[in-house]
Length: 78
Image (cartoon, rainbow, N blue to C red; front, side, top):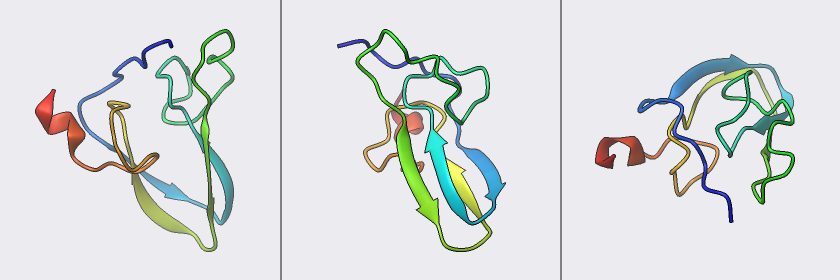
């Protein structure tokens, strides 16, 4: 399995519209924290999540969260 790349040791605070979103789990996307297809050729897939309303979410930047795609503080142990 390919290991994810830690992009930053902090979450991304993003205001998102209702609908489907795809979080980059591999760390290779140039459009962090969202997938741009850069995972192609790895064994890592993006994580789809759906919001029912516009809201602020804290998405993992270190790619080690146990609650993907949301930050769980795992970056503090890196």
